[in-house]
Length: 146
Length: 146
Length: 83
Length: 83
Image (cartoon, chains in turn red, cyan, green, blue):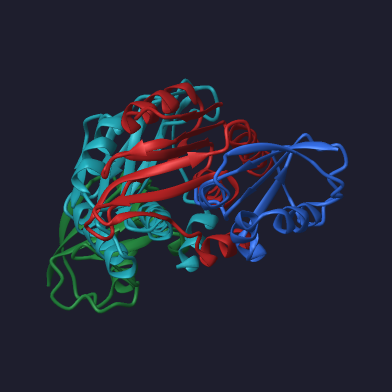
């Protein structure tokens, strides 16, 4: 199980292939990739602040919850912090399972929990200054699905 | 939108990277990959028969249904046929959306429909002969979720 | 009418051919199955359990009582196992 | 007791430091917020709307009335926006 909190960019396809090769015996691989999106057309960069120490702990707990709950061969979580460019990967998760239902549900669960329970905060940098991204009520509500 | 029915293997990571690069503006990319799995420990190959003509038509209809139903930037479907080795990729889908919910649901939907509505049939080749893989009642039931 | 019949997976194996052209007065796939099964036991072996069969008319998944009308191609096969 | 306080995102910006060590008699995060807000308006600006705040005690997400006990590190921050 690889869980990485890192400032550096990563190659999503190469990570997916490595994960798939290592998860021998799994029939179903689901991945999610998050990309820096510029909704306003004026964003120059996205800055991710995090809580070193707690971040790794929280991600480890979230991954363990997924493994306790679904039949998984393996889990991958990569999450970046620092200053990211528009179009760059922010994070990815991947799940490997015998059956597709486990792989899909676990990846969906991981994303909901990483969104609201991993200590990251996003700040948008634009031509007109900076602003913190507010958490959405719908993200907190999404946790009730599980 | 790339929909491919092909005998040749493909590089899942390279396909995911190409898809992600092309889907500019999407914040969420979900992929599913199916790998040939040997449950019995005696399988030497998996043979996929399909219905040329109808396969392409059915996959096109399924992709269109997903695009009508969710807000998607793009959809990728690759499905192989012919004789496949254990551990080889069988197929993949990927969805690109602004929001993760659309990307997850659409990928899950595509898989349920490809499973039971695209004209493929699997035959396992093993040391003791060959056998057709039966459809599962649970696969048909999964369609009722949508 | 004259129609092309195509078979897949174990339906094809039991009938022994992948494709054939037949002249028929059948108005639905169910009629076709009855007509063919009366002709030769190979069809009975393939079509015996209709709940394990699916049918496509001109490459669209259909029901056994869907009118054939001017169908050019009718396909019989087991439930699909893609993905 | 002596405890390290850490702040993130706009909580950090409003308080003006990322980390500080305080001596306190507070028994819960809620007590701490009240105590600090009475000391300096910077804390009032950061802690004014508790519904927009989250707290972690020794790096575990906690409630505002969770006992601090022998906590070494208490963190205040806005709702998280990972993923």
